[in-house]
Structures are given as C-alpha cells and as structure tokens.
Image (tube, rainbow, N blue to C red; front, side, top):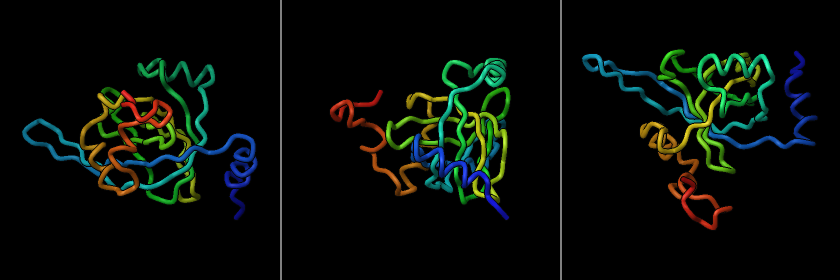
Length: 163
C-alpha cells in the first residue's frame, strides 16, 4: 500500500522542516467521589507540521472557545492514537510538548486519525505552562526525553525562564 502522507510530508519537509514534539497521552482517569484525576504517560517522540487554521477551521475553533492560539498539526506517529479532551472542559486531552520552543499544546480535536498508517491531523491550542496540569509535566519528565531545564528555560532567552 502506498503511504501518500509519507510522500507528501517528505516533499513539504524539504522546504518547511518538521518540528519535534513529545506526545503525552492521557491514559485514563479515576473518579474519587466526584473528583476526577487524569493520568498521563505513554510518551512518544513525534514530528509534525504546525499550520495556521483556515476560515472554516477558525470558526470551529472559536465555537469551542479556542480560537486565539489554535493551530492544526499533521503528526507522524507510530504509537496509539492521541485523545482529544471533553468538548465542554477539555479534560482528558492529550498534550504535545514542542521541543524547540518549549511550548505545551492541548489536543482539542482529532480531525483525521490514521495512526495505523503513521499519521494524524489534530487541532491543538497552546497552553501556558502555568495552566498545564502538573501530572502532564510529571509524565513528560518521567519519559526521559527531556530534563527540567528543557521544559522551563529557553536558550533564545539566554537561559531565562520561558514563562
């Protein structure tokens, strides 16, 4: 079977290189008398093409109150599918950590899921580190892909805090 995504991604990435990300999957939750705790782990290095939203997609993002910092991303993955958050609260969403600029992104829609073929199209919104759940940050640290310094500082800012 021909993987057209791999062919297109190869051509596009020659002009517009892929960014490196770490996918942090929501692996489940526990309900403690109405208080829901979400669990994160199963981290994977992925690459992706981040793109701005077009008019229709921007309208969809605005309808679920995500329009100001939303993007779409074509990711290349070998792992299980990522999860999108609940429509009303965005709880249970998977996260992406963008390695080069140390940004967290929350997955709010899975538009196309072809993870069996190695790719997917996701809609994501940027999340400040202060609003990123602590258990997401802990799962990222536990993955071994990054250190505290990788998460909390930015070399472009001369080692100063990113936030």
